[in-house]
Image (cartoon, rainbow, N blue to C red; front, side):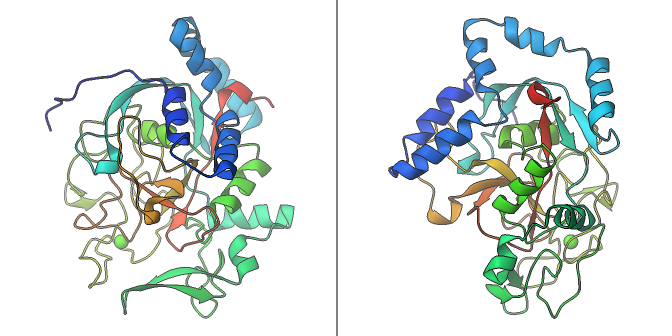
Length: 342
Ligand SMILES: [Ca+2]
């Protein structure tokens, strides 16, 4: 992969607003405006970066020791990782059309969960808040049946029984699944956190952009020293059962090696909900088909394969409607530093 692309500094604000006007429905426009102004990417500071670099450098001059003491004070430092802000090349000119074009962006510092939210984490949340997930309200959720190669709504499937009520109960140390984007946001709100924007997710997954010249944070091959580095569908899709890495479905969080920031499962296991809508990047004029409209998700899952969606690449992206619950989608939280003490 030779870096032939022309680096182009973009302002996220312009990107988002250009994307908004692709929508023709006023309600969707209004909703996205709300999302933007409550977004964890601080657009106010992006605006400041247009007229002056002062704000950017002030952000970069945050004393990490102060931040870490705040983390210890407010959050469990064993559970969240400090990701120092900076510049990196977001997207990929070598990926699928929806990952193009690659361009330079500025990211502010933030905290990200080391691990995906587990079944045990979610149970604590449910017990503390009496929350009922959308799958439980609807009475069903979406499961892929590899024996007949179809996606189907399964009655009784939920975060506790992701394959259905008659199947195995979810293990406490596995990522929670069968949670919609709305459910994930409810969890984040309860803990005064939020879902990551795609740009934050990619920044953390690529070790602050340092690994953007390769497919995965560990290199370009699925295996490293003959060892599987993540949980994917690695023996062929969709006709053969894929568990050469040890797992057909989800795997325990932190089973595979973390990246150098100490963040686990940023490839495979389960797709991760992101906060933003899945929209074409600035400079990309394609119109997404209906199956690519929805809330963005990153990281790929145990169902992804190198010959199929290849969703566990650093720049890969997909989408699902925000009310949908599937057995291969989970999430993790981030905390933005501009409201750390709120
Ligand atoms: Ca697997």
